Every structure is written in C-alpha cells, then in structure tokens.
Image 1 (cartoon, rainbow, N blue to C red):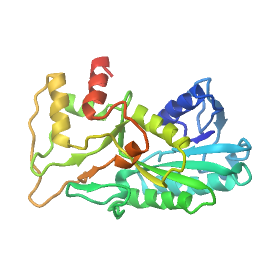
Image 2: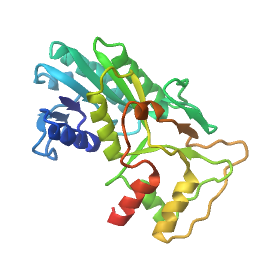
Image 3: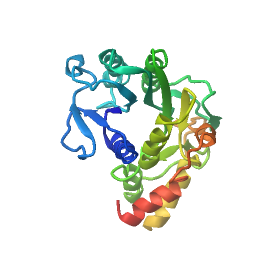
Image 4: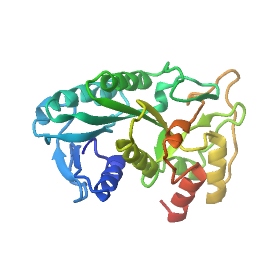
Length: 279
C-alpha cells in the first residue's frame, strides 16, 4: 500500500494498515518523522523526476497530499498536477484490481444557507479551492483504476487546535442568527475511515467523511468556552450575509450504511478529549 502525502492522517492510516498486516510505503518530501512501521519514500508529487522509484505491484494507493499554502498555484500543484504526476509514475506499478483513494474536501459543495448535502448533492464550489479540488477528483475518477473520493470536512485532533486557541483567546465570537453550520471529522476517524474503505467490497465512488453532528459554529465555540471557563459573547452577521465561512450540513449516511462507526461521533467527544489532555 502506498500513501502519497503521508502527513498526520497518512501516518495514522499507515499505522492502522500495518497493524492489519499490510506493507505500507509513505511518500513525502521530508521522511524524518515517519514511524519505523512505515517504509519511507522521499519524493514530491509535484516533481515527476522524483517519482521514479515507486514500489511495484501496489494494491492500494491513498492520495492525501495537501497544498503547502493557500494560493491557487499551490492548490493546482497539490490537487491536479500531483495526481496526474503520480498516476503517470504508477503506470505499470498497479495491478488491474488496484484501488485508489483520494482525500477530497467538502469545499466542493457551494451551499451556504444551512442546506443538507450528501454524495448526490450538486457540487458548485464558490472558491478556487473547491473548484481545484473538484478537478482533482475528476483526475482519479476518470482514470483507469477503481477510484474512491472521500470528501472530508475540517480535520481536527491532536496538534490541530486552532478552534480551541481562538476560543481561549476570546476571539471565538460567531453569529447565532443566522446560524453558521460547520462540519468536522477527528483525524483518527479520517484515518480509520480510509482504512475501512481500502478493504470494503464493492465500494461507491464518492463518500462524505464527516462526523454525525453538523453544528452551528457558535454552539461549538460556546461549548468549548464553557469547558475552558472563558467568557463567550456571540456576535451577529451583517443583514443578508450568509457567512464568509459558508453554512451547510453534511450527511454521513452512506459511509455509516457501509459499516463505519465513528470513534468521535460529535465535537463533544473529540474536543472533550483534547481539552482533558491539555492538547
């Protein structure tokens, strides 16, 4: 199994796959932080010349490389050029039955008014990020091997504590009216969900990777503030402005119907553990 872009989620995934008895290769630019269970491959998906020593006869590829910065150029390199480069380099290394998983994003959905969305909902992104990630999905879905797109929401977990930091600093103030719905997934669930899909018989081509409970942003911030013991004062948005953040409720019914059970079904379990650990 090859994990391209083997960062936080990739390492968690690799450790789970090796625990299940698989040989796992982790491809990344800097291999110093890879655990010994994962065989390192130093390469850069944006550089075809670095992709010349990939292992043969790969059964599963997981592409979870991320943009190094928030620019349009960086997104193109990570989500369009990188997939094309890797697929080109893997020509001849994959078995006919090999499977490719791509970690996409719920940013491909453009809904902003609290709508429920799932795998069948329209994908009409309103940002270049969503548009480019959607192009990356098509690179894999139009390829020669079975592809599974996993649209992950905001990933949080150990080392991903921006929301906690914002609330603890007193900056966690967001509108109650209209509510700004948010979606998330714990980094461990993101990894275990990918492991589940890597061995799932007859999978669908697209899954939404979010926990069980979309929640208004102010509700999450208020709950974190109550645990931290800091003051919380919700603000309001300008009249007629849905939110610069977007507002949608992502449904995870498809992945749950295929047997995945979330370790962190809502923000309360996930952030509760982080706060208890002092992360």
